[in-house]
Amino acid sequence: ISNGTLDFGSGPGFIGAYNAASQGTISASLAGSGGITVMGNSQSLKLSSTTNSFTNGLYVNNGRVSLDVAAAANNNDVTVSSFGELTSSVEGSTAPAVIGGLSGTGAVKANFQGNNTKNYYLRISPASGSYTFDGTIANGAAGALLHISKNGSGTQVFGTNSTGTYTGTTTVNAGTLLLNGTFSGTGAITVKNTATLGRTGSTAISLGGDLTFDDGAKITLSLGASGAHSTLTRTGGTWAFDATSQAFTFDNIAAAVGNYTGLITGLAGTETGLSDIANWSITNSDWVGTFSYNSGSVDLNLTTVPEPATWGLLAFSLTTTLVLRRRRNS
Image (tube, rainbow, N blue to C red; front, side, top):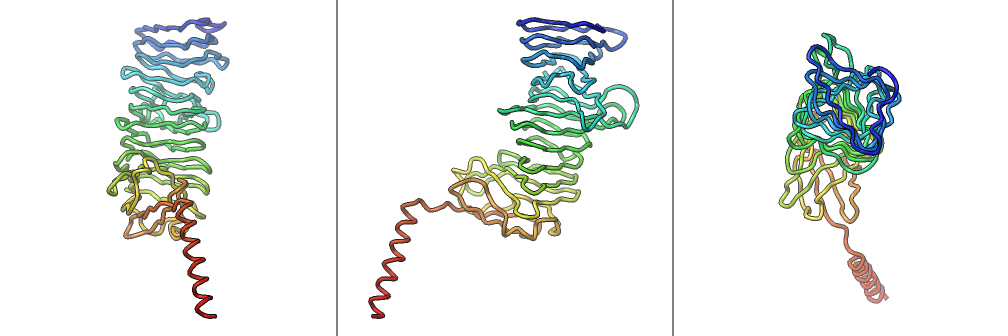
């Protein structure tokens, strides 16, 4: 379908692409407000229009859907089923293929065609809310590299069953990216100002590439009772923290007070920003965190901020002590 508009109206749209010899291509504009589901295809379905206007989601039920231009998905949220695959065939780093939030249990990869070592880019950009993808994220055919950027104010979770074997870069420009699966094989990761990278649950994640937290970037982890917590582990690469004051935010913090050993492990001790660990901070109100570095490990001592009544009692006690001292001296 090479021209015109394929308009599904207000109802859900369904596309079945079953072609035995080669991939199918839709370069006509896709329109409609009920979302589009690709039912299946024997090889690949390429979306190539720069003027797609459909809304309410793209669902890859079966087979492969290739985003061939930056606007192919029209910023829609994308769900990839366990039998589906989403690929980016866009080479421009400044204008990558853009989707909203990513969900499902299928596969996300770089370009599927040809034997090349080119770079392909996918931007995940949920405006709000939280999305979980529990599938495989990988490079493409014969060396094609996948690069992922996270934009938007929302949260993208790569779930506990997800695996990241792509070796391209990961850039967290905004919002939160949680790596809850297995991502030891990924390439360099950069977390920009105000953005957040982390992990939830009481497990560790091993990262073997370069990891850089720009000034103002945050780390998020989970804290539990009895010292349980999630962990970032360096297995290779060069890591650098906020040179001014690395900030942390914690979930499940209501159950957490005490010493937490090994929030970050495997460090060399010479990482940028680590010498300033005394100024590291937490963003959670009503708690005070003191960080320390010990033999490759960043540890935390967490205490609660006294209630206002406690502050008043302390102030009263101090005032009374001073008055008594003055009376004795007089």
